[in-house]
Image (tube, rainbow over all chains, first blue to last red; front, side):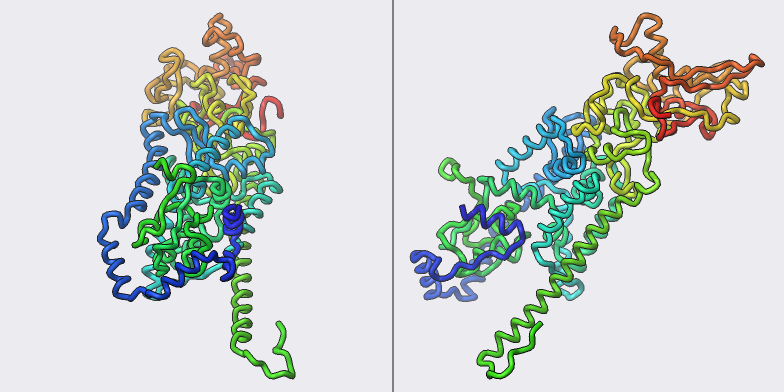
Amino acid sequence: MSYFVDSLRQLAGLKPVKPTPEQIPIPIQLIYKEKRKTPLTRDALQAVEAGHARSPNRHKWRNRRWITLIVVNLLFVVSYVLDVQLVEGALTASRVIGFHLADLNSALQVTLAYKHVVINLLIGTLTVVVLWILLGGRTFCSWVCPYHLVAEWAESLHLWLAKHGWAIDIQFHRTVRAVFYVIFALLALLTGYTVFETISPTGILSRALIYGPGLALLWILALLAVEVLLSRRAWCRYVCPIGITYGLVGVFSPLRVQYKMQSCHHEGDCRSVCLVPHVLDVTIRGRARGLATDIGADCTRCGLCVDICPTSSLSFTYKGLEKVL
Amino acid sequence: MKETPTGRPTPTPKPRRKTKKLRDQGRREFLRSAALLVGMVGASLAGLIPLIGRANARLRPPGALKDRLDEQEFLSACIKCGQCVQVCPVEAIKLADIDDGVGLGVPYIQARDQSCDFSCDGLQCVLACPTGALTHDIDYPAETRMGFARLARPGGCLAVRGLPLKGEARGPDHPALLRFESVDRWTPIRLAEHPFDLPLCDLCVRLCPIEIRITQCEAGTPPSGDPNQCPPLHAIRLEPKPDGLSATPVVLDGCVGCGVCEMVCPAEPAAIVVDIHRSADFQ
């Protein structure tokens, strides 16, 4: 049960609860003790990391993810440009070989604003709920959302600039995203317009790709400029309600990243590459409460931590199917 | 913010100073977050500005939920997916840009450039709409209420001036598409590929989809043999003037505001235009 509670706390932006020494089971405490007894030298750590850097799996999940994201978005574009009617519509709502699909957050906004649900929208929304329960919820963010990809590249640029002192990282309180979520829901309900959709870069980019660019891309550029120069990945971390909607679905998903503390060196590489680093706080020495911990639903299942971990302490898991796979 | 307690010497001054620093950090973070909140909500609410004075009122696709003055329902129900854009055979539907505010991504039709000509017959855009923003309550072109045509510039109208029409309606290069029953019932062709030779211009009546349908029904050949396809009322007719050489287009109660008359009008600018805030039900 605590996986659900932890996931919801993380989605709300609350700080993870540090376990007290008494809360850590004896076997885990013994492992920590053992690790302290034989501290890893810098040279040994670098050797392990150098070995891993040469590994062919160094960018396995990132490459798979980028290809998936690009292919999914290209399917929409190609389908319209060539008029093959395979995937009709945009990311906000579409029809895939006749099946209705509706983006959960767009569907929520429209329902709150219009206060009326048409059966096609209901079908599309339920299909997407089932799909993302199976596929991990916030998996949508890192594997489908077109803004994620450009923001990811912008983040690399931000990190490079910040290293040279040309960019700063203004941080906000992480609960602000949950507050945004409530406010955008209320705005839709009270004004009767899908107010959030006006500034949603996911919808804007998806439509720009399919139906051609427009002035709305200036808003995307403004967001990216802020993220590159002023605040690391600000939109996804502190604003976007789509992430929370898919996160809530992901709470029930069996697809998770799992952390095995025994082999972990606690050197923190995973947290430095993670797009939502707070979900990996459990990898800090003294935080794990069990041998294996599932990373919470705010995780976008992007696989960057799985790729970078030199000791394979982080891996994808599918609850209930571990033995079959 | 309290001062340090007086009296007793402080045994652990370090953590306390840190606490105050942390508190300051916390306050700054709170203010920053509040500023972010106000900024983003402000940006999204700015999308409501174009609604003031109905600045973003546009001709919407058939079945769009709206009444005479208000598109509120349509804008709230539209999920901005563009599926209506994808199914339109004459590519009449465009998606609005960010200058339309909350209307961003919502479909509209620029009738003068490319109007809806009902060449789909089945109202595909209505069928494609996943949220009912284009209401599924309508089944036939004559049931739509997009607007109402109006002879806005009688002085420019060729019929009013008693002039013939020879050649293409909108010149040889205009990209507008239109279905001509006499050419191909299903495939629209370019207006430029269909020159006319008329002693008195009557394009707005001749090419009106409602009038074409009525003519077919009167001939006993409604499309697909379906009598429901027959419009109950005429949309437009040419009223001859006493001189017998000229005539005035008169818009009738059967007009649905599709915009074909505006698109095909050879006068520049168009003599006849579609009023968005009027319809056969609200005049």
